[in-house]
Image 1 (cartoon, rainbow, N blue to C red):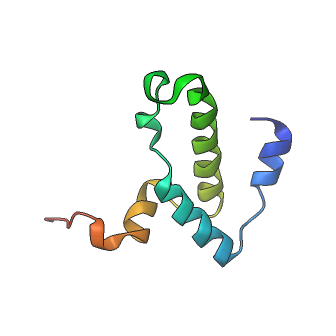
Image 2: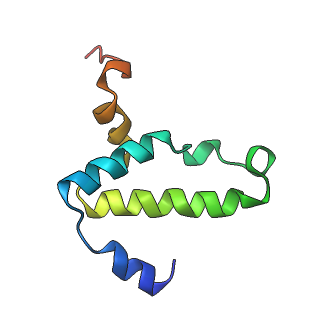
Length: 81
C-alpha cells in the first residue's frame, strides 16, 4: 500500500460511514476464500482491497473479525460458554 493510501486511512469515519463500511464488509469474501482458481488473475487485487477495508475498520476501533456478528446477530452462532 502506498504512503498516500496509508495517510488517507488515518482519517476517522463518521458513524454513518463506518456503519456502511461494516455492512459492505460483510458482503466481501473472506481473504481465505480468495484464490486464483475462483477469482482469476484479479485475486491479488481483491486481497489488497480486503486488507484495505480491514485496516480502515481497525483504524476506527472496530475488529473486522467481529463485524459480521455485529451486523447479522441473528445469523451468528450462540456461544455455549
